[in-house]
Length: 180
Image (cartoon, rainbow, N blue to C red; front, side, top):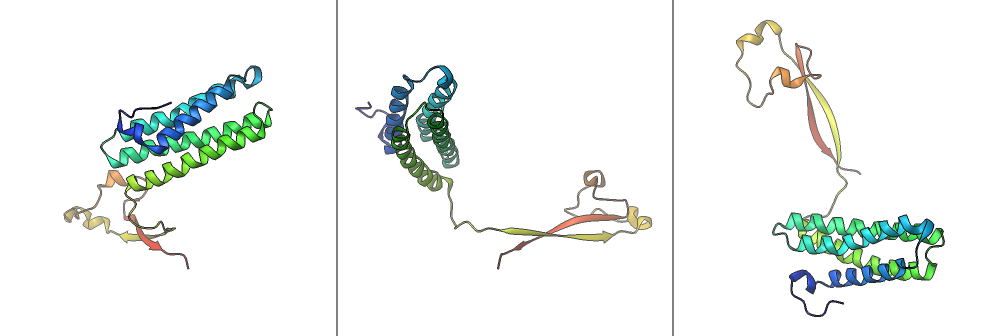
């Protein structure tokens, strides 16, 4: 077990809890063999991925990078939960042990979720934005095309493949639609 914190991640409760989970997973995996060896190996990789990504993310200077690594660690925790389900239904892991281990994972996931949101810089509540697209057709007379100067912000003709027939340009017009 971790006694004397040396690095910043050693001080994180979520890191310490994930190390406890890895220790328990390794202890339980000693009993798994035969048909369960593939799930065991995947479980140990996923379990180790949790503290490894926490430590790596904590070492990043960019908050977005930290959030990304915490999300990866969180995904590994969900993977561990699914592997435990596989082991439980295949009689490799008893239900009580699986439940106890999942309670640790749930705590890890909760902590990682809060940390990732904090580092990801979420500033507003998430809304379900619906985007409606209206297509605006602009007719351009072919005989006058060469006399005009290019309009600022217009893409060149060859950049509009599939959106032009030579006489008109189809431009999407975006507008946000909020659910009622």
